[in-house]
Image 1 (cartoon, one colour):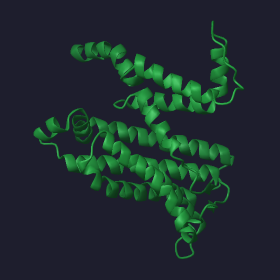
Image 2 (cartoon, rainbow, N blue to C red):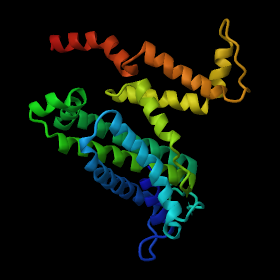
Image 3 (spheres, one colour):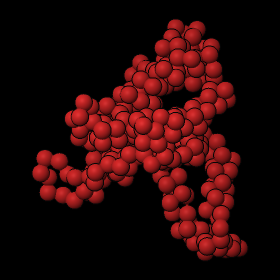
Image 4 (tube, rainbow, N blue to C red):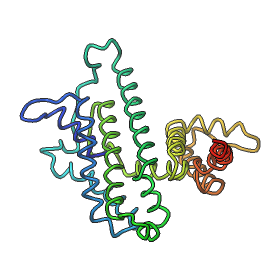
Length: 276
């Protein structure tokens, strides 16, 4: 996300050879550049898996935001880059807030459909096989190096687009915009939603949003339950609720919301397919 955010910020503020690029056109460029960066990271990480792979991704998340502070002449240092306020293009009669709202949801929908189509094809089957067992996948003829590197690139592309949209919506970019805690939230969303379900991923992201940005509302709701006493104004209460929900989900739903949906609707879909 940092790569995508800085791509949009630099191209919009500094431009190329003195020509500023409109923020809308920097979105695909940010995704592509972040995707290339993901491919470059994925190549040396091919020998790693499991916990070690997770550690290297967290290490990158910690180290990358330090680079703009080192090369402040290009990235703007700790101050970062300040963008112009968002404006609706092509003379559209709408407010900037409405424009960025519909733009974000439109891009999210397109990328969601693209991910769904990708997972239904050959690439998706190969990635699921690698997830379940790398040894079995390799025995079946799956090119582990190719698909693991591709997974890095695709995920980095999505993150780059998200970083670009965030910068456009907030009109600024600096090294502290995407802290390491964001990586924790992403992992938590996967744990809640399930690692093998697009619908579960959406549910996990929604749950993280509610727990993070609506923690006071959640605490007040819990405070009305019998034999429960929470003070919404108490410092750190939101973190307690956040951690408690994660623990409960991991115990009750070890496969996440996606696994629950498969158990509920799996028999129904199986019956429909058998009848057809």
